Amino acid sequence: MTSTTDVRSHAEPSRPAPSRPTASRRAGWTTLRPLVLRLHFYAGILIAPFLLVAACTGLLYAASFQIEQVVYRHELTAPAGGTHIPLTEQVAAAREAHPEGKVTALRPAPEPGQTTRVLLDVPGLSESTQLAVFVDPSTGQVRGTLESYGSSGALPVRAWISSLHRTLHLGEPGRIYSELAASWLWVVGVGGLVLWFARRRRTGRRLRDLVTPGRTVKGPRRLLSWHGSVGVWAVLGLLFLSATGLTWSKYAGENVDELRAALGWATPAISVSAGDHASHAAPTGHHHAAASDVGVDRVAQTGAGKGLSGPLEIVWPGGPGEPYLVKEIDKTAPTRLDQVAVDPASGAVTAELRFADYPLAAKLARWGIDGHMGLLFGLANQILLAALAVGVITLIVLGYRMWWRRRPSRGFGRPYPRGGWRQVHWGVLAPLAVLVVAVGYFLPLMGVSLTAFLVLDGLLGLRSRAAG
Image (cartoon, rainbow, N blue to C red):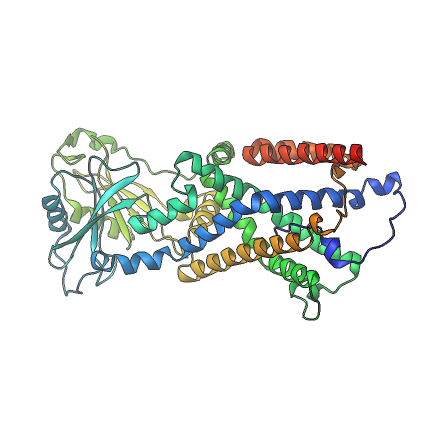
């Protein structure tokens, strides 16, 4: 919850200054609360713009699947026919339309009325991008070609929106913005939740008053009531978005990958060695396939015999001695991501990988990423992401509104002095510092910005004392 002002300044009238707390009280929440408030304030003022951009672009991405279906309706759909021509002929039609390309994969039409997608490597395309040729499975007619990005097969409009959300189209430097937002999202969420429920203990309010906006309060208290209530409902989603978003980040993402590998949580990979069948392999002109290739139709039948069903992706052999890969690509729940490797010479299965055999951590990682992308529960997932994005935007707007109404230039003093963290008892500050160092090491951008906040706050506090 990105509050940008002190909670007490909205909720309570002025009171006489409390007596100096004892050492035992100084070690508790009484002196820790000003630190949390100041940190919440700085994050709200300085990090909220990054969060606002991430929320607005995320809201657009939540709708990108429907936008893609509308914009590329001609390429993605075809008149439903009674029968389909062989996959081999559909691939041949794509090759004929683009002889400069090399076939890398094929996605057969998953349902009647949809097209088959043939993926080609074409010179001049950017990294992780292939040319998708859309073929009518009933007639073999090519209905269009589009660039396809990444394993999700994002077409140009969705890929553009995705890049806007991740990097603002600034390349690698742009990833800093999204990593900074993801690194702080959980901090402002948890910090705001702690402050909001601590307020309940102090004021004696009922739990219901903290999860629903106040109907009778007015002015600043009304803004605070809406800010806190929306934050309570959104906080779990914010934690989820933060954790999953960091997996794509530049610096923290590398640490996440290393941690998963060290703990054995990495996603398993199917063997791509054809073993005893390697002697049959020979290069052909479209990547690599066996000299006596059984053909993609036979490969698809082999996958079906192992229980694999659409939507499917059939990946061409990547080199001599390597098999075809037949992969389920249905990332909606229940997830279907089984894979089999098929020897191109004999059509025999040489390896299998079942999603049910993934380690639990690998499954959770897969579900988390797919949930963040809006794939796991389909339309319901996209609506939930859109609601979270609207929630974040609401929290930020309310937070800035509260700060603007209570800013010091309007005559309102600061309820807690700058540099308040230096007053925290060492028994609390020492383990807190260790925790901050550990988190800062794992989340480098957050560590650097947090250090800057604390140093700035301490210097401002010293200046205020000197001026006083």
